[in-house]
Length: 157
Image (cartoon, rainbow, N blue to C red; front, side, top):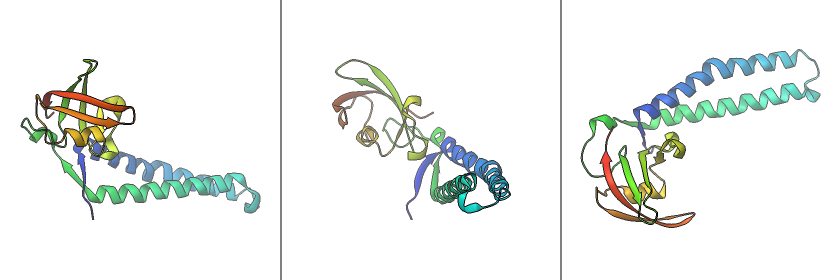
């Protein structure tokens, strides 16, 4: 069984989603199914079929979250230090072609959000950054072509 690296914030986010599904979404869809059943013939009841499909999606997501939470390895980024890039590091990069600076934190797959500056440990850029240090240059092949970056700073916050 593979362990899934995740930050404490990412773990809390998954737990909150699971709690919401169990305490809000699941009871709501059960009520919707009961209400749809009261309308009579289930074979032609679109509301009933839609509610059953929604229930299936909710139960599937609950099972997926319970599995992931059971396999998560929570990594306390605030207890980490050093100059070498590893999981949880916040990295300041400069694009060597455009001189544009960008900051990314390397996080677990379920907590990545490029708009918020969090990239998945499995992303090509994150894989290229692992074990690099401040001052190192990397080249990454992205869907948009090859990009060259220099690591300006590494911190753990």
